[in-house]
Length: 240
Ligand code: MN
Image (cartoon, rainbow, N blue to C red; front, side, top):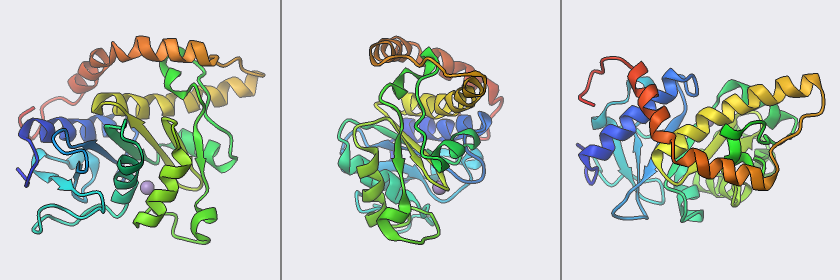
């Protein structure tokens, strides 16, 4: 295992990667991270590998500036600054998931927030935040490849749980790894349902109080979904 990467967390993070792929939230790209429980200035994230292929030994411990603790660590993700800067800006956040999941992207392009269409998406009660990279840096390759852009993204996220990134994808945060994975999955589902409801008429969304109550109720049941998602993975090429 890598320098300062606890075995149990490396396994859990590898499983989170596999689940996000199986649930079609990430493909060859996209990533999920976890704040280090022993040192809040550090976070755990895979080296540059497709999420479906991530093994516990691929998990690397990074500092807040995006540098790896282990000088021998393999090549990192270009967009690790998404994670680094959100952890720096949001002490409450314990996990970050960045993806290009398909149904969310149109909302980002028309600057329309995701709003909670059903109880599973109560975490969207405040609506999603919007990030326009052009405002931060003009014309770019759209990637959050440095601390400056990561900081701008974290500022756009503010206190919310989800930020849509125009022309790119989205990032969700959670207070645990499993909650982060849950939110990434249900942000995508909500986008699909919101689009479908809007084609029928003017949707009634959960109001802020309903959203909060639903979110609190769901948080107690995330392990049930997690176990199902895990079961779908079948035999793994590492010990779960
Ligand atoms: Mn990306």
